[in-house]
Image (cartoon, rainbow, N blue to C red; front, top):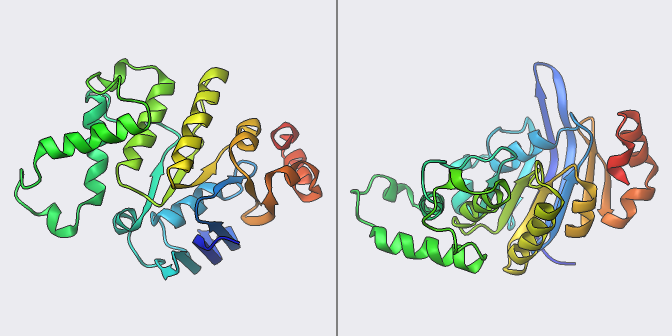
Length: 256
């Protein structure tokens, strides 16, 4: 079995006395395409926030490549190799595609670099790097276009490429297929396959189960802050606990 690039153990989190995560354990092998699913309110977003360092757990540990990063702040986690995209596109709409990707490069800057004089890193070099990333993932036809003028599906890809500009080992995607039509969803799946083949580990929160089954080989299912299934994607359809969780929330179709 591949060595885990990311491992969680005993993660607990409460807000105002309400338990949101209870003893969550997760192990993601290097190079995996791993889905995190569950009904609304299952704790998926809170777990994503714990992994990315947005919030601290009440108990438990977050390990990246065998290193305990539980107390490491979010910005440093990006430099250590964890990047994230969001369900709602957070690009700068008034900037060009290449300028948005250049913003993603700042996540790699060292603390000293943040306080370095402007222009210490040549803009031309940053632009060349951004163009190389766009070309590598098939988005080079769009570099000079203003983001707000592009189709929604293309903007979704650009946000992912901006996250990739930080050169992550682990890329966390929050409902990447949300709002896409059938053709755009298929194109995104193929795009993410290419990202995976480039050596990036993917962790995907998603409600579109056909998309999950076509992309991810391993699925972790959460309900009421606990892991109720952790195994091959093919096994989700037959697991009684998973079926009960979705049927009990009126969402039986999601697990199909």
